[in-house]
Amino acid sequence: MCGIVGYLGNRQATEVLVEGLSKLEYRGYDSAGVAINIGEELSVRKFKGRLQVLADDLTAKPINGGLGIGHTRWATHGEPSDVNSHPHFNKEKTIAVVHNGIIENYLELREELQKEGYVFLSQTDTEVVAHLVDKFYEGNLLEAVYKATEKLRGAYALGVVCKDNNNELVAVRKDSPLIVGVGEDENFIASDIPAILKYTRDVIFLENDEYVHMQGPKVTILDENKNVVEKKINEINWDIEAASKGGYDCFMTKEMYEQPKGVEDTLMRRLDEKGRIKLDDIKITKEDLEKINKVYIVACGTAYHAGLVGKYAIEKFAKIPVIADIASEFRYSDPFVDENTLIIIVSQSGETADTLAALRDAKAKGARVLSITNVVGSSIARESDDIFYTWAGPEIAVASTKAYTTQLTAFYMIALNLAMTKGSISDEEYFASIEELRKIPAQVEKVLECNELVGQIAEEIKEANDIFYLGRGVDYSLAMEGALKIKEISYVHAEAFAAGELKHGSIALIDKGTPVVAIATQGKLFEKMVSNMQEVRARGARVIAITQEGNTEVEKSADRVIYIPKVDDMFASITAVVPMQLLAYHASNIRGLDVDKPRNLAKSVTVE
Image (tube, rainbow, N blue to C red; front, top):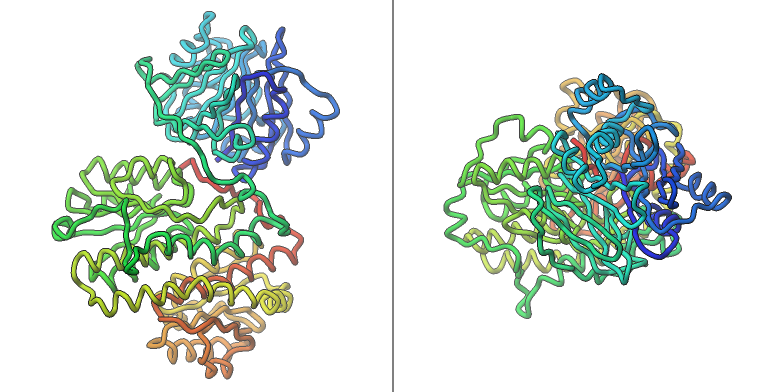
């Protein structure tokens, strides 16, 4: 979940690396560092803390050189410290390495190297790579990296430089994201596109076990057998300004307010002139559907919560039973997956390690994989049989907002498309549903107008140590996402409960003044939800209800009510989640926390 940038060219490498790392800091902000080849030696600077600590040091004491590697860290092995920061190096500081991922057999390798006389300074898994490269280095850096990686088990993206050549950079990708940027007499490596967009829009997407050898302006891509691989250069056409705050106080605020456009783009760009859904990158025919006897939705975190809503949508419209599962558990539960299984994978980044591993396991068993992701060219996108891009635009804040609502939009469209293909929906219901979806962007815009009210509610509950979220049916899935949001960025303990389960134990947790967020968007469950609100209110809870306009009966059972525009119950999930996103934001802001960069979390989870 760390961020890597590498540069070889005629600019000052430190300027490029710090600029690139600033676009990747969302991937980890425990520490940051650079290693620059200054001719006679490698100059390494690395510090615990935010990137600004490193930037200030480089401003005060510049390093000159056109070759370097940089890193921003999310700690996996070893606490955040100057010593544990990347880059890591060999004893003589002639070889430096940056790493994203986890070396699973690092303890075994560390013991072997220590027996050979190698001394370790850090607690990290990465340091073994620096010493392995040193062990195999005999004047050929590329060959040494090949030999070192033969010893590694796990996931890694590596960037390696050596003192002996100020015109050479070697990199490799295995199960962790890495791209190559191609410029005019300069080249780059990076964990993600925004890091290099200031300098080039020409990008090469690397596959697993591909090596990069930069020598001056020349870039060669090789496979694990050292064969040269011809790679397509892709032009990136989205604007770097989309990844800046644009006047908002933080990325999360900006991204919440971008949701109407994200939902609209995801929907409207896929409607033909007759108003039908056209999914060019999904080729599932009626014959294919007839062969499918199992459907799994597999994802992590917020994407998993979107999958829970997607399960409801597919079962309602396409009349196909669906199992939603957490990716980190899916692989180890021995699921019944074969060539008659459809796996729907959901990942904002397209690089989520557990989800990607589940995809590969499913493919190995013959399953068909349909993926929903926001990142074109990501690993999950490239390895899937069918793909749905959400077109949310870059999402920088760790707490996902617009990626989630566009994932919901994607699920509704996929469900309707499958239903039409299968013949399980009438034309009347199909077009009525699309018309309801068309209304959603304007309705999300309207919900965002409740920002001030939600801010007042957050102020009223700011002393709370526990918050509970209740829902029934699809609203329970929403409750899980609401609870996750407030946990992520305000560090307040929050739990979601299926409202009907309260009386089976959970109601014992309700005390006087306990905030309870009750979601009641489903007409057929509304009366039961009102009863559940009364149950907790009778025990002293402070009830905050989220419901559709017209459900004024809820006011008798709630202390505060947030109304969302009236929409078909099935599609209310997109609008109902927005007040919960706003509540999490205000709760974090009131506590003086960093909304975009919550502790212990990173945006793209590329380790298992």
